[in-house]
Length: 162
Image (cartoon, rainbow, N blue to C red; front, side, top):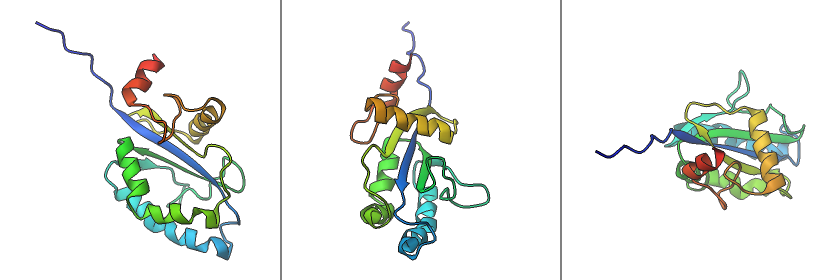
């Protein structure tokens, strides 16, 4: 009789991205972005593989939260897989926001997106997410903090975390 391999714990992918506004959210030049928030967030909420996203209490989005600076908005979400997040980001209405981001946000001079694996059921905090982004900026991609372009499989991240 052979032993069964140890069970691999269920994991999800957390993501944080930050963007520095060119103008305040109530500025007419940002209005097209603000108008896209509800439809894009609704699309995320119903996207295959979506698990959770950060929202400010009493609102449907997180644009009022400013943990990374007064003119920096954050997006923090959890997905069942990297493929699910990729599909939503690049194969949905969200792509229009990506195409127009230079109209509303400053160009990034350092990493603005970080991905990391979490145990299924864990809800990442903004502090945890900002720490992962700081880790990526300071040390580059690793199983602890990575990007789409330099990703790590969940099993690899778990093995390195031991």
